Amino acid sequence: MSARLERQKVLQRKPAPLVDFVLEEHTLTRPLGGPTALKEQLSHMLEVGQRRNVGIQVMPHNRKVHAGLNGPMILAETAERDRLAYVEGPGGGYFVDQQPNLGDLFAQYGILRAQALSPEESTKLIERVADAL
Image (cartoon, rainbow, N blue to C red; front, side, top):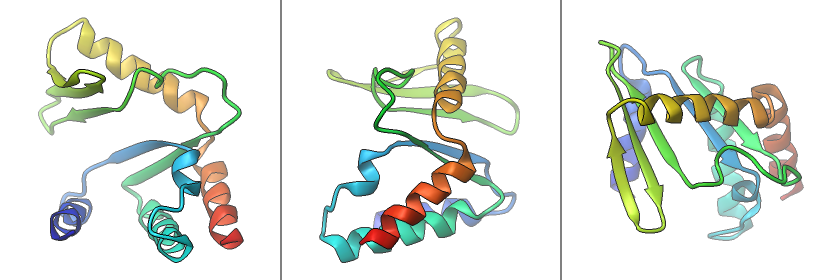
């Protein structure tokens, strides 16, 4: 728990990093820890999502296929514009730092964001789910 809270400080450092998340809709409705815990998590998500450096989008249930079905990935770009990716798969995770694979992952993420709900639509969905709890 303390490590998770420590990681959240990254969002508050100066200069603030730009971070974007695309979440599957089912992550908003899975009641791990019970409905009270889920409502608190959703409220926290909405609070964090209001920051100018944070973007949150939701991939809706009704999307039959999308660019993120191969599994989670983390994409990073340094202040010097160096890029790196970490991809998780069934056999474990691995880093990608070479082209063309790295460019392909960044392009895939762009497609994923285009397929997800807009940030505004995502916020409204998260609010509806939280209000229903």
